Amino acid sequence: MNEIAVRLKFLIPTLPRAERAVAQALLEKPEMICFMTLAELARATESSDASIIRFCRKMGYTGFTDMKQAFSHALDESSIVTVEEISKEDSILDNLRKVYKSNMQALSDTILLANEKDYEEAVQLLLKAESIHFFGAGDAAAICQLAFFKFLRIGVPGSAQSDPVMQLIEASNMKEDDVAIIISYEGRSRNIINAMRVIKERGAKVICITKLNKSPMLRLSDINLFIATSDVTAGKDKVVRRVAEQMIIDTLYVSLMVRSNGKYERRLNNTSRFFEFNRIKRKRN
View 1 (cartoon, rainbow, N blue to C red):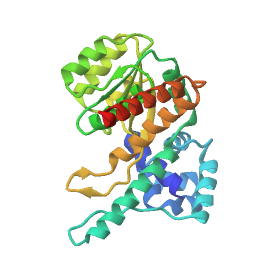
View 2: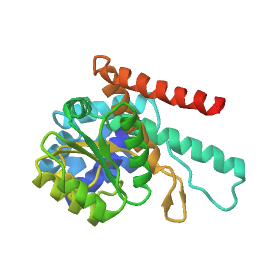
View 3: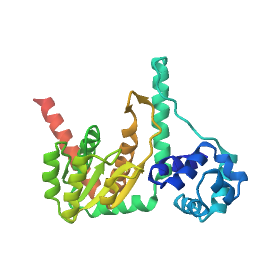
């Protein structure tokens, strides 16, 4: 049931009102669909038959009967996994366990949202890219810096600027054979959106790593790789939201490595060899 629950949870923000009502009802009481007809579910959720059919298709089913069977089968197999929030009554070890569980849940749920076609297209873009540039605001910039370091180490030119002006400069210098990887949890950062508009004007391709949501960033992106975060929080800070983004970056990195016919592996070996040479030289001095 967890797979369906994840898809419901992260589809809800993108839905119109009538379909959102259906999704919310099924998220709260997934068993209700098992004993209801299409008309009964429409009445219970104050929607319509047509809205439910559209919702079924957005969930990836051919129709109401197909979705009903999927829910019935899933309910027989498992239960919905929930993540507990941090509270002031928790011990340090309680916090450790909750953060661990939240991290693992975020990774598992992100895999459930993964579309193989989108990931495959993203890797193909990176294989053909002349350079790869990373864009992120706030703490997403830290993920971008780490990603830039990884790709630079295997000889892929690019950038990971954190300053908005420098991001615009990098964006304005991109070419058609370049690729931008945008990391933004909400997908609403004004500075990032401005940089994306420039990137698109330059004809470069854009891969976005973001949560499934109605955001202006999705309208400017060529490929969207979605994260799912069932997060513990401290105040308003979603403390593990970056772990899924890091997993996606690492997936793209290793996929690029193994599909490059040894080109990037040789470059990595060369880089490692020079690091080792400098280490030995310093030690002798």
